Length: 130
Image (cartoon, rainbow, N blue to C red; front, side, top):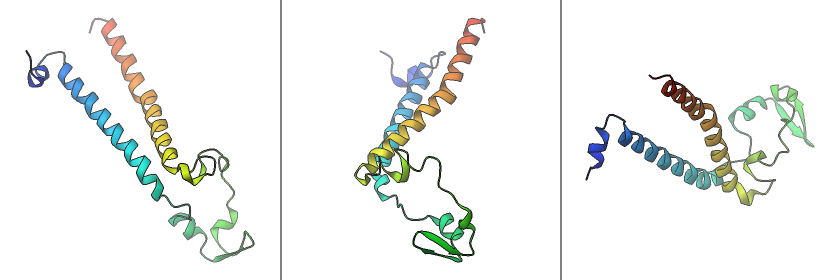
């Protein structure tokens, strides 16, 4: 019977690959857990950059008055989207769920941009006899 240490010494790197997969799964689960819990701490109030750009202005009836950089701001094109403002459809009850979905979307994009091209390159190298 081979141990995990012996598997690491195999020329095909199966043990190393298994550890890499295990590490990725643990890292992904930690990201999902953090997103689900820490998302509730997200604040919809203006952040530092938004606060700085509003210096020198006052808000009167939803309109900025005075002299500040924020007077030229316009709403983001996706401001009315499902995931806007750390919520799902504007319902703050689902903030954690929105965080988890954000992590899943990020992982999916990462797989498409990193893993699939690497897999394609490996299959080409394997087919050319290298």
